[in-house]
Length: 249
Image (cartoon, rainbow, N blue to C red):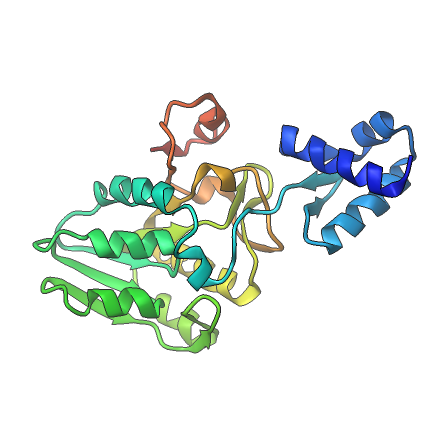
């Protein structure tokens, strides 16, 4: 069997099962585990999957640049944003990260809702400029241009000054074993600081991001209080997260 044929089968199996193991692929393709390990490394180098110990999981689908993400899965994000609004109450202190789902929530905030919003997102700070009852605290730092957020030590130290009621956390990838991960190291560090500064962490994740992984670790899955998705919360695929004590909405 040609290497390219093995690649197609590995990717097909990954799409079906959302994870593949060296031993299983070795038996399926009748080649050694070392061969499968090299195949997975090559596919990972091409950005087609995420190599993990003993096998591979999918990368998060969709674009990474903010401008492209604004128009990706917009209908699903609207569902997530409407669900998230039910968690917001007057006089809360809320951290908004720089995700496009969080930006939609900012756009939908009721005009009479009183909040203190802390964010490192330029688009969200700009949106809330005109909201009469929302106090905005902006985290300075170095601009990450493809996400329009600030990053770096100044940003992290800023978030450590607070103890927010809620953190609205946009999720790039989440996996029950590998935790929450992202594609950019410094942005993942900022997300970790935001989680540490919050009493409750509400993850905003379309279902296609569940069971995927990126290169940079943010937090363990069970550190999330709630996962808001674009699908009904009682779907069978969510049971594994509910078993971890995470509320699915």
